[in-house]
Length: 98
Image (tube, one colour):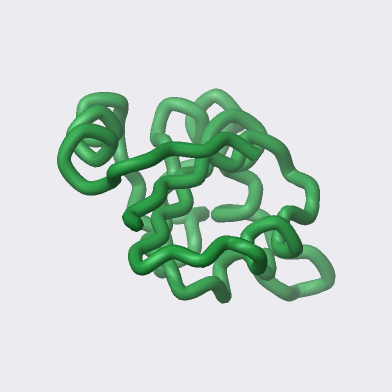
């Protein structure tokens, strides 16, 4: 199964993602979840960035929180709303929200 998971909060959601059994995982950071893509705690990036997944961050949510694309970890692709719609309809069979 191809699953896209929306992460909208800056809390640790690694345990939930560990239990997913999917062939293709996409993690989309939205709302406060974009902090996973741009903030380091104690010099370390978010553990979610270590997942074997395609990683995306919504540019509008980054801008709202004062981040630029330069602040985002290189493993994360910054996308706009139009690209998000394309990803949802073309790349994944199911969606989940954490």
